[in-house]
Length: 220
Length: 220
DNA sequence: AGGTGTGAACCCCTTCACAGCT
DNA sequence: AGCTGTGAAGGGGTTCACACCT
Image (tube, rainbow over all chains, first blue to last red; front, side, top):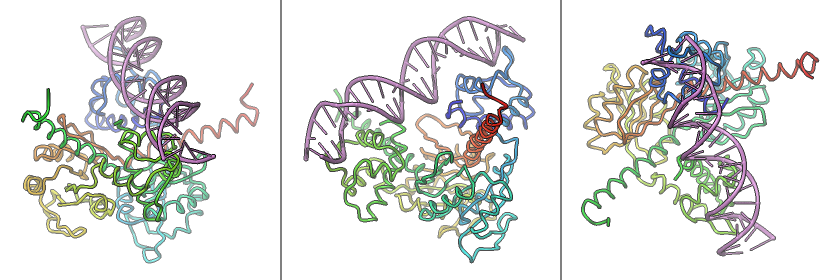
C-alpha cells in the first residue's frame, strides 16, 4: 500500500464517520471524495488497495467501509500512548478529544520538571520521566508523543526507544535520529506557517508584476 | 520551485540557525544535510533552485545561505497573524515561541465565547470574533490560524477569506473549501497518530509471521 | 444507465553519478 | 583533491479513460 494512500485513509475514515452520524447509509466515490477533499479517481484507487468493498452502479455502504478502513488502519484496537513534556502543547494534547475517540488512550503524562509532579491534567496526574520504563512495560505502550523543548527531544527519544516504544510523534522542532524499525512522524507548527509565508510572498509579487504590466512598465 | 523543496527550506533554515549559533562559519552539503535530516544530493538539488550560493571545493557560508533562504521563504519580513479559537490548542499556539522568532507576529486572539473576552493570554487580550475585519484591515493580516472546534471551522474560514486573509493554517479536523487564490494548510494531530498506528500494527503482524516461520508453521 | 475497479499514460520528485569549478 | 551544481535515470503517485459489473 502506497504511503500516500495510508496518509489519506484517516481522512476517509473521518468523512465516513461524519456521513454515518448524518444517517447516510450509502455513498458514491464522488460524494465521499468531496467530503474528504480529494478527487474521486484518487479515492477509488486508494480504496482498491484495501479490496473491492464497493458495489458497481451503487456505491459504498458507509458502515461497512468505515469498519474496513478502521480495521486496516488499526484503530479498532486500543493503543496506549504516553505524552512526554507537559507544557502548553502537552496540555493541549492531553485534552484533545480526537485522540481518545480514535482508539488512542493516554496512559501517562510525563515531565522532567519536579515542580509539576502530581499536577492533574485532563484527569491524569503528571508523573516523573523516570516512571517511563515501568509504564511502557505495564501497559504495552508502543506509541510515544514528544512535546518537550527542542534541546531535550533527542534524549527523550532515546529513552523512549530504549524502553521499547517503536512509534514516535514529535512536536519538538528537532531532527530525531532513531534505529531501524522505529517510526517517527514530525509535526512542526512554525514550518507550516513558513510554507504559507512563501506562497503569500509570491502572491504579492505576482500582484506587483501584474500591476506593472497593466501600467505598461513590463511586457511585449 | 518544486513544492517539496519549498516544504524543506524551513528545515534547512532551522539547521543553519543552529549551526550559526554554534559558531560554525562554513558547512558542506553533507553536514547541512545531516543536520536537516535529508541526504546531501537532495539538499544540493533543493539549493540549486535558489541559485548558486555555494563554493565548489569549500561548501556554503552559513550566514549568507541563512539569509538567502530566509529571504526566499519571506521570513525576513514581518507577518501579522490572527489566531481564531483560543481553547487548549489556541493557548498553546499563542504561547509558542517558534512563531514570533520567525517573522510571525500574533496581532490578535479571537474567540466566539463572550465569557472569554478580555482574558489575557501571552500578553494579548482575547477579543470578539467580530473585531476580525477591522484587525485585518488595520494590520494588513494575510495569514490566519484556525484552532476552533470542527463544526465552526468552515464559517470562521469564510469570514477570514471575506475579510481579506489569503493563507490559512487549519488545526480543526475539518475539510475547508476556499476560493482560488487562497492557500490552506492542515495540521491534524489525530491523523498523524493513526498513520503511526497503521505501521505499528503491521510491525506486530510481521513479528507474528516471522515467529510462525521460525516455528515451521509457514514456509517452503 | 450508473458507478466501481484498474491498466496505462503522465508528471513530479528523488537519487545517481559525474562534469566543472576552486 | 574536494565539493558543488546538474543532466539523466529511476520510482512513486496522480490522473485519465474505459472495461466491467449491477
